[in-house]
Image (cartoon, rainbow, N blue to C red; front, side, top):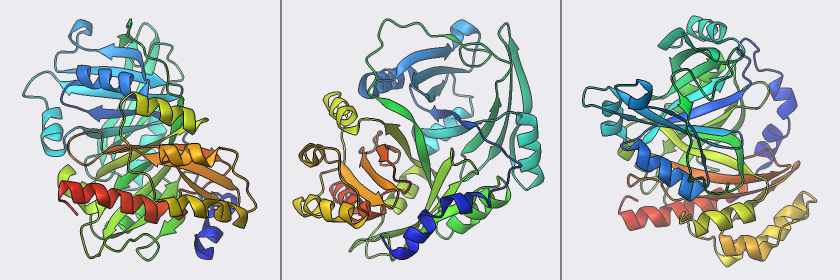
Length: 386
């Protein structure tokens, strides 16, 4: 990692002081996927990732145009939504993008104020503040558009005690596989088109009060064949982190270009989920059938002790177990991190998951970029899309 990156990464407290407080965010509330078959997708996420049944909305609850299954694992909530007829606008999203993330919902104290502040700063409205009620109280939601057709929904639920949202009922299921140890969403990465990264950086700065606390250019993120640029945006308390990627010129087609081609536009590239025991989590996910990117070469793992010693850190985990699972290691002045990436979760090479364990480190694995992107390129070559 370059000294320039280090200096950016390790002055986080000072940088976060520059974040504006007009949009206080309490955390990620939920992530909603539009999918072709929510029932089957729910079974996949339960079986493969260890999510649990939580809430449901469909024909049985009076919803005539769509069905939604809510799954949870610790603090993570995902919604899988499918249209129930050909007239639903949800179909347009699925036809164009395939299964993918539509809504990144943010938990706020005051949804009306969040909407007012962001709209006044130039956001495009997706949904005006709406009060939803049932016997358990009320939830206020409002939404704005961000890159592509992705939406940020502001969710105020301080006056609600129900299972999830009004219109949903508790989803009772006899089939609930054990958790895989996933705890919370660490960050979510968006891919945008050529020369669009700075446009969306400015959006998050001006409209949402975020700060850009870490930047990488194509000189830092490249292989022999491809390159990309990335800037990491965060809100003031650091609970919400959105890296934004754009493609850069290279000899061949980068992973960002491949995503944009198959997703047919900008969208969420991957969701990073944190665990306290990545060896246990990844071992279980592999046993459940999840496929990960190929293991870095032997030389990569031989270099790990030296990289950690640079920052005076000692690896607590067994490096042979990490190598056996293909888990990568990176370090900064604050500590180290362990991370691994799944292959795309759908047939289109678009959305994937990252599993991450932070042992003090606050970066995003810059020291792993070359090994990671070479692994992705090997998959691209198999698909004929490099």
